[in-house]
Length: 324
Image (cartoon, rainbow, N blue to C red):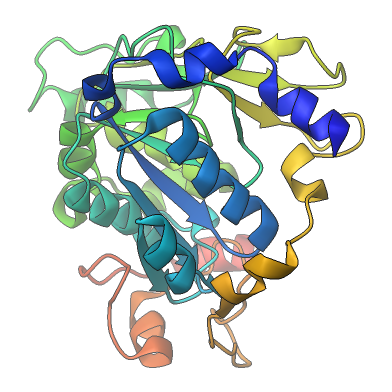
């Protein structure tokens, strides 16, 4: 625990944590994408409140634990969605982030995952419409296809190498206006996802990759953000991002494991969560860990409605389903 506290306090003095202008806290709202890991989720909600005071918090569980009681006590919004392993399926993933943006009346939304740690208020304000972790040397395919689509909203838009090097994972920020535009059911369905999957790779459907295409196709500016640091094999020196970054993202290779996943639930906090109550059925498209297996008709059959997913029907092509 001592090492964890030292890790989490690095770069954030006690004075800094309480001295910033309260009005600035309303610039940011938080979207927590969770499943299980109750100790990490409880700790993270409290850390957001510690450093961001009145910033609103929206917690979404992808068919996992129910944190209704936690949010009643801590003043956040909680939504329990049906399990969809949405990290690999843009249709529910986008809709859930869109719902959060619709709820959060702020300028920027910061997405967090349970393994992120928070170290203070950002010293470097957002410089684009969205941004995240620096992923050095990364590029994407079908650039002309995306740039052609972007001209409708942003004439002259170019999807640059700098934009592509921004990892939109935990610690990324999003202009609320951009989310409500690019991730709407209608906008995201203008992309031909079966075409993208056929021409590119399976990774196009992972949330980080899929969001790059969705936002770029609408001409929103993306760039890396120094306030999100990637922690690798060194316990204190980030691989990318600033050492005094407000948010840290950890690889599985981090010494001792990801800090928040080493936390244990305090006895007094056991009442703050419970099982979400979802039970997976047998058959295709039903596993909470399946990848590239989304079917909107099947989703509605399983869960009774299109809650937490795109309302426009979509089915992956048989070609892609057979390939993966």
